[in-house]
Length: 477
Image 1: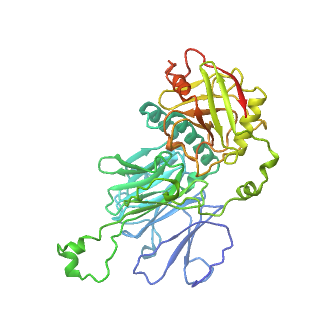
Image 2: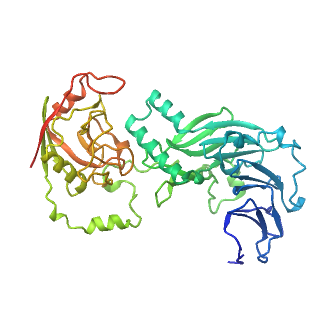
Image 3: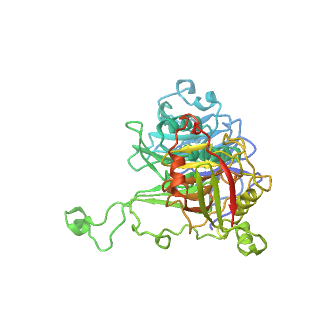
């Protein structure tokens, strides 16, 4: 550490605002409770060199364009401001193609009544992308302040396009929408950003359906990464540098020598995730295609939470849980092996409800051919049901069981930690449901009954069978 600057206020956002050849390292730091931005010498005293007072509301980001030595900052009122670096005494830049903001689209966010939360510049400095709290990504031309394109990633637009395009099951769409609501309540959107690739022709940012790679020449999505992952990606970084090969001369590198061609570009995206204490890496290199849980990637390498530690040492011998159940339905019996050691709360909930006759008379209210059959709702609409504790209970995920085969029995939910009484049985492997729905059993007999239920005629709007299929009773063994 070369210096520590003590502040008399709570800082908001910080940004280096000097060129690489500058003799003085300058830092811009905003005040959390006001629109002021203070400029400090990184090796100087606690007193600011300059205070910028362009903003009337607290600043949400500070971005530095190193190509033109200009800073762009945004605030909670939706206003964007341009100002120069130290070489132009922090004044309004004289290199721009406009003199008044009314000639630009810089009022875009204020007019939409939304707050810009992050900014990034293209490598040549001629474009910048701003992410806003309304889930839009706006790309501006830097010199004239005009909008080039706006990508709409709002939940309502996803809800319509996903359900009409059938890109994901409705259950998965609803779960992701519930996560988006949680993120919005916790101000998690403030962590979302967008980054340009080295060419400046591609823009990369995270959405509720994965990390999108957008082509700015055609304004279209060319690829979506992590679509099936059980993660809401937030803040990302892109690494594109070509690795250097030791012992290779310049002459050999520029030649057509086959040895020099072995070292190719290895781009990588690093991302954070909502409520995840790990980083996620995306690379062009594919993992070894080995089957089995032992060969799969290690994603359980962080310290377990306090709740997980308590659950691990809890003596489960005091709870009498069943190992098998027989679901007697109007179409036949379905025998299920339960997993009390893997999902003790889900099994306890299921067994207690079954013994108390809670499920008796319940219909299979949602049946989707070649996907799953769902029941456990006393209302028969998919909106009812409660756990034996009278409230929602937490998920129980274990890497030893996955949705990698048909006839898996899992808890239905409306998002993380929202388990009640509803459950479903899959008809096919559904790996996209891993670590999203608690698995508490598998069908070991009566698979033909499950198949017969899944093949009945249903209302295409509600997925409810035209003729009710009911649970008569459930026997626990």
